[in-house]
Amino acid sequence: MINHKKILAVIPARGGSKRIPHKNIRLLGGKPLISYSIKATRQSKLVDLTIVSTDDQNISMIAKKNGAEVPFIRPSKLATSKSKTIDVLIHAVNFIERHNKKIFDIIALIQPTSPFILPEDIDRAIENLEKTNANCCISLCEISERPEWMYRVNNNKVFPFGTRIHNINKRSQDLKKIFRINGAAYIIRREILLNKKMIIDENNLTAIIMPRERSIDIDELIDLQLAEIILKNNFIDQ
Image (cartoon, rainbow, N blue to C red; front, side):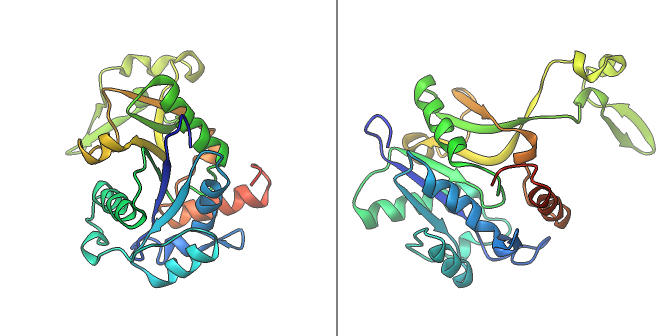
């Protein structure tokens, strides 16, 4: 809770995954992938309740074992590869508010595919949302792959991507810093989510910056392998 506002953390974890079968419960450092995000939300000083939205009984069992609540099994129509996160999130909020008979003021969408998010990241994002009076707060990390150095290919012809190709002769350290969404956390005010049906409101948006080594997003097998290397070599404290 912050400023008397209740905070709900939702971790979406469907059972189907084409690139990595059973991705959300694949072992990372000997623990199910989803256990990392559950631990982060449960150790947050500001989150009041952590729930997992899943269509999979095995994920449900593992989530409960790791301390999350699983108050429902997600409807199959919201568990396809084409299902939108916004619809999954709205369903979860509506269900838990009806079930618990209480309103949550701030919703924290925490992705199970971002295992290196920390409780401090979540709390910092929530605090930043309140401090700036923004509608949403996202987590970013600095990029190393500069858009100024990128090209597009069409019919074997190569063209500059964007309009800043003149910066190709500059050193990376001389260019302005640019950031990308790392997918770890999205903090949204309830009215923005339910009334405007938005997860990111770019008209009133703030962000926290996370280090690149903790911004890995498990999407393909190579990401999982890289995360194992990060853990085994103690590149981060987890």
